[in-house]
Image (cartoon, rainbow over all chains, first blue to last red; front, top):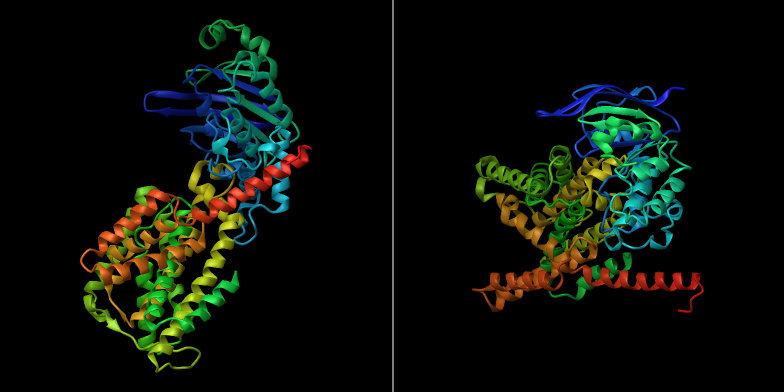
Length: 249
Length: 321
């Protein structure tokens, strides 16, 4: 099977700091891949390069065989990669439904209407349908500024789903969520994401979440890939235990 | 929405002559301030709208004097086109900047234009030049009262219709995306929307409004000089926009009229301290209505909408309201 995402020899330096050191990875359609690693290991740099926020110093990134390594975030999104953020990037003065209405508008962004109402029935229905998947329809008309951090996180993910991306990148989907709620939150995310995103890559620090929801784990260390395989194999790898999980599991 | 515009226009028939010119200036200034509000919805404030105001005014004045086009509607359209064309040149370049850099660049450009106008003797240098009284659809107005009313009517109808268009724009898909760009450029880009394009389009709209307003100011004064592009002129437009807030188009007209009334009366009764009165007025609005005059009725509308949403939610859940 051809990979959805194919990365070859990706390098990125910030001065003397090596954030990506000859990274090569293929991600097949339908996989649920978790990126793990200590802070500064290069996970978010990898996500930022794949989504066009950072340009690699060298190497190539291809989505379904199309080179996206030098494209802008807007162009990458239009080709089929969406992302959520570690700190939710929302329009906090707008309501949840309005946030999603903007995202729906983005689906045909070359022709944003100057006169058609922002919340037409179609856009509103689509927004409510997405909120419903996350169990948030009752909050549709509440401004984001009034919503809790966990709810914002879910809306941030809902925004990324609007385009039905080929590849969805989630940056720490359960960060800021309490230990009691983390599995419920992740269940909700996986359930909501399933109909639209065939392939998911998520950055995660919580090894319980990784073990339970990923079917492949890639461990990063100092800009390199330390281990790549099933959760069982990677999480038991001595180097991963030494440099990443610190003996967890 | 059209009815109030017609009513205000006809009301001019019974207004004293001095209020006609005051209302014409207020409507004209409101047009530029409305452009600033349109732009402010993307999070960028222009401190140099005098540039487009002057471009519209000078463009109309030159065409009127050289080609004899004196029709008020045609002059307004020419002013709008002159402002818009200049906006199209500058907009894409300036949209890359934001915040204070954006504001300072617009101010700098307007002052460069001001300096060029002062030094251009063919345009009358710092003294400027005069134009003839405008006509309307081939009718020349000899009676000053009739001429004032004609200009009042054209300016009120134009600004009224512009206000309606701006309201439609604010509620549109593009208007919502503009608010989104104001809050989070990064997310807008990650939704596949170009934040730069949104800012550029809003910038050109603001330039069109300022150009049309420059034409009205020219018609009202029948004289133009580089003061049109000076920073204090731009500052006055920002002053009106701050008074109005960014949430409502109609608030801009209320704010502009309020400012003209406060200025006129304080100038009349307190000739040596009218600037102080103006300052206190602005401070009071900022203190008690930090989101501008428009927040008075936008807040009420939201409150009503909130109550009805809660009521319908309660009904859906079977809870008696």
